[in-house]
Image 1 (cartoon, rainbow, N blue to C red):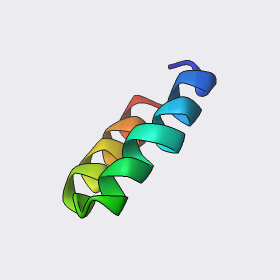
Image 2: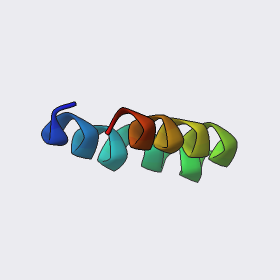
Image 3: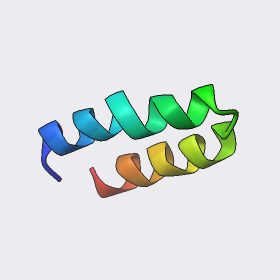
Length: 37
């Protein structure tokens, strides 16, 4: 997976999810990213 794509996702989607109280979804997405790597 392209590192820039991962970085962009972390900087936008994951941060927004955490700020909106959707930590569970962020955790699941981060775990998926680690599995792909």
